[in-house]
Length: 274
Length: 333
Image (cartoon, rainbow over all chains, first blue to last red):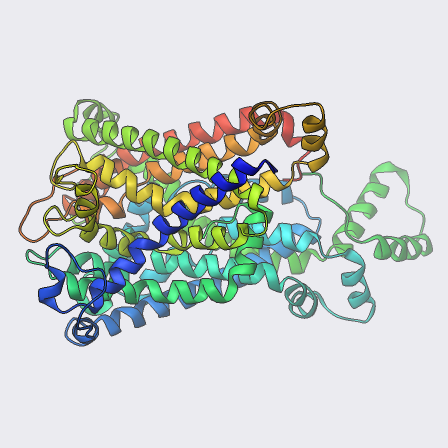
């Protein structure tokens, strides 16, 4: 855009500084997690651990039961992701490719709630779970995250770009609508599904206030809740806490590293947030 | 949002079949036949079977809770007490006199304004500069995006240790600049900057990528033509780039305001006491809703606070719609 030499130099300097600032905290937490206790509180701080150790990881995964929390988070995030991918793609397909009475109204209702944050209507959700005595269960933890309004909108955009002729050709070959959904629509919107999948997974994984509200016993803690509660103890040790933070970030980073191209494309087409 | 008929082929086939039937009498009958065919053509049964359950679920976990929140705000409501009297607008009058809600609102607004302005300005600057180094840009965008995919809780936990007043690396770094140690999370005047810092760090990458998409859509010819006419880089930025980015900037202002106004997890983590040093209890709106609803079980009152939040969000959305209306006609939304 601006090819003047001084601007290019400024661009490299500013962007490098920003990128370094963005990743430094991750570097620091990893270093803290690997340092033995006396080194953590050393002043002035060492940058690299002198005697790196995995004891904090042992401690957090074993004694503090983080393995269980990670498993809980994984179950919730995977269930939520599957449900959202299915519901969003099916609803998106219907809204994109069929004409039926009330279509505009239904779509407008769905779209209207897209921007309203969960925190606004969390009380009735809680009362529903409370009313059917489902507190502290996986079902309760997953249930607000089985559909995503934005996902319906996003998949509709993706599926609208599939040419009608393809669906029609399948129909002429005698395919019914469900078969078309599975074999044509899903097959042709893989990239969009992946972007939405990552987004749905991370939304469910990262949510904090909902588990905080419906979980009542430690064995149902999610990673986020476990981490937040653990660091609230009166006397915290930063070694295990940092190890916990590293462990809880890792799955997101792996998913992001593997699917970054789809995610970036998703943002480009619709402002998808990760 | 004009419904688009997706079936050019079947339209033709159907029309052929229709012509074999008895010719419709009168306009009404013709319309009935059309209607019946359009349903057959568009597989109404399949639409109902596929969309029905999803829409029902959507009503149960989105529409009903939103309406129920509004209803609750007119009641005194405790989940385990049978007596739930209708109190009219009492919860709302109480809201106006509640000092801690007022503090929370002021804090949240202050935080929100700072976070939005700093995040978006920095993001815009970085995004524009990245367009000058097009080849390296994807690497930078990727690095800046890592904090975005990091959930709020571990992000805040990481920063809590950086903010530590005695052992924290931030104070250590600042000591080289001759800045004395700050009690980032303990001092009531400083903690807001700590939370702003975490939030800007977390969300910057998202807005850099969004701006990047918008900037790439500005035709190069336009900028080159301006350059040939002798426009400086500054002039091109002010007279071409910023005006063309205006809709995206407005969009990001609304989105960022909603994201930052809902701040909760970082506050929950950062205001918890650390190593026996009590952190300052920084109040925010979601924190108040959480406390009233799930710590004190004053659900009617918390409902009124939620409705206040809902109104705030809807106002922002309406502003966005008002500003975008002339563009909507062209955009396919």
